[in-house]
Image: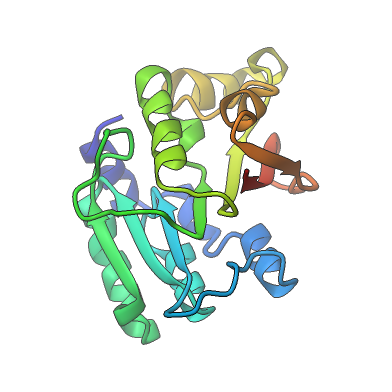
Length: 209
């Protein structure tokens, strides 16, 4: 996908923008299941992969994290910076225009205590997907948590209209078991109860070994 395409989507009201903060992420923080190990200095660090306009990043900053959000759509990043200023957490949110699949993202240095992927990895294929997986591995450490939300289904099980929209155009489906195959060698993986909506969504909480 190209940044211009996502800019076009954001300007016209991208569907995921209506969600705001991920309900699953909000619940995990409220339950105390997402929290970094205590550190002797400073706030725990979070990385929001494909942060968009910053809803999840700002939420995490409000809950004690120093957050770096990375996206390749400058239009969305400007909105994210404005959102952080309005929420009074700009000192704890930094937004970077970068390629998540690159071997290095300038200005982004790990490790992070928490990594968040809310519908980014499932929107990729091939070398780009592999590169993002490598980024997660490179920027995490033993004990790091990884919140991973995606669409997960066998393409043949999708309704034809959804299959055309989600799989052929946007590639927004992870194959069954794909998250385990991509991350299982480095993370202990818990599949959380599937969100009731939208259909075919899946949510995982992983801990780096």
